[in-house]
Image (cartoon, rainbow, N blue to C red; front, side, top):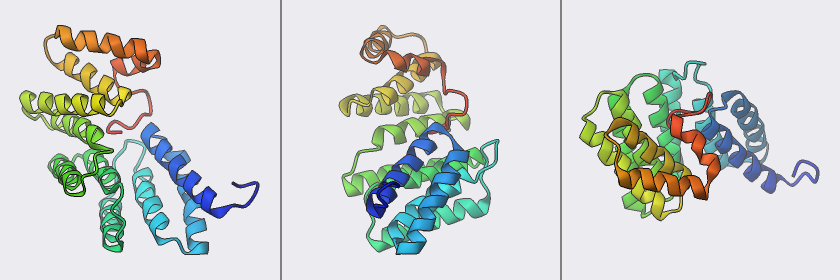
Amino acid sequence: AHEVSHTPSLRMALLYQGLVHQARGDKESDLATTGELLDITARYGLPAFSGYADIIRCWALGDSAGSASAEGIERASGTAQLLWDMGCRYCQTYYRSFVAEMLAASGRWTEALDKIDECLRLADLLDERLHTSELHLKKARILLAMGGEPADVQDSLGQAAATARTACKYRTETEALALSQALAPARPDVAARLSELAALRPELSVHLSGPRPGQALFS
């Protein structure tokens, strides 16, 4: 897209590149990618892409310890609502969950949990379940970090694994089952499914020991 100066393709490529960087916890690369995307949106007047890039950039501007400023959290949340008001409903649950990550990284656990629950309600409202399994997994991690009831953590992990399996999201299912097994007495059915997943996708074995160095905890 750079070589042929095709702006529509470039803006899409940069947006998805930014999302990949976010999932990997690579803030430095995300700042570069979203910076270029925001330059393009300012030049050509692309408000929706500007909003998506701004939310990702707010996440990336958190410090090296992962915490985000109150201003960045408010800006990302406001931008998500602005996109909603513009009629941009697609993947709202995905982008709003970045706000939950920012809140969690700042130790604002109750607000983070409320934001995830808001995203899950929106998934029902919009009948859009592309990100539901990841939302349940994020909820489980937030509950665990804030000292929630073990039964509630396991319930969220169970929902994450079940919805991920239906959607063939092997990584999310592996992460949910591995965490469930680490927190509770070993269950033969969980161990058997993890073995199946390892056979299907051997590279997923890295997730059995927790997030990789630099990986976003809640992505």
